[in-house]
Image (cartoon, rainbow, N blue to C red; front, side, top):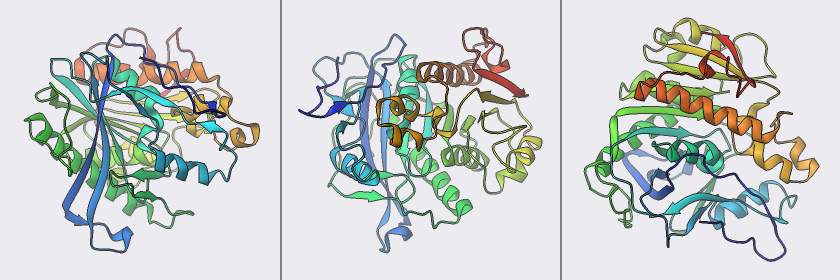
Length: 368
């Protein structure tokens, strides 16, 4: 299934498809947590989230692909760049909307994006994981993510500059992830947690193995991953992709497997001063790896988008000098190797988690 052609006069931005054998299906859910109010909105509305459940599909024929961003969110993103990317069509994903799910129970992963980023900004890694047999649930955090579009057309953007106390923001994200886990249990048993009761894909019931749940995130989403693991033992393993850490988990540590991934712009252990104490308090399997020639956004779709946009925009995207295809392949392989080991019991035969993979020499070992 190919992505729709770009609108007339617009230059297309392309993202590589997943490498695994399964096609990818997806359904968007509007979730409402009535136990919390949305203080950032200045109203008494309950906390609302947008999530996308990506799953191995049985058949994608006749199902449209999800856009990387819905129309309102895309307009808001382009407004951020003040016209510099107006001539470009944002990518399409390789996820077929509402396609029927493949039979079988799958490990479940939560993904939390960075501050000012959206849940689709790591489609390259997310879709690849799904193609190899995972269910991956990507979560937007309104007023902290970049552009969150709801089914009624509302678009919530993030404040700029960031006015929020970062430990408090991470605590909100952790509460979001716990709520999403609760709603996934509802979904697994065949009920519909979507606020608008929009149709669910055929066959999705019973496919989520919530006993094998992991989480990963980029930047602030990595901090949210550690924070939710501190609060909720349902999350059995986690990855922080180049994110500073906040909250009690820094001093308390974790007793379950955790992977830290750093970039080449840092020396020693850690993205900043929060990593060494966290590392010292990790009591389970642990590893710290580094992506060579990379900057902060090399762990996301931005590394593939940067070479396709004008030079002035590219310079501000913090992707580093690593070739995009090398970064994408290395990050995809490392994230999958970690979750295969921790949630499926599959050994890391390629040496990725020791920074010793001849196929991916960009991944370096820092500590373990």
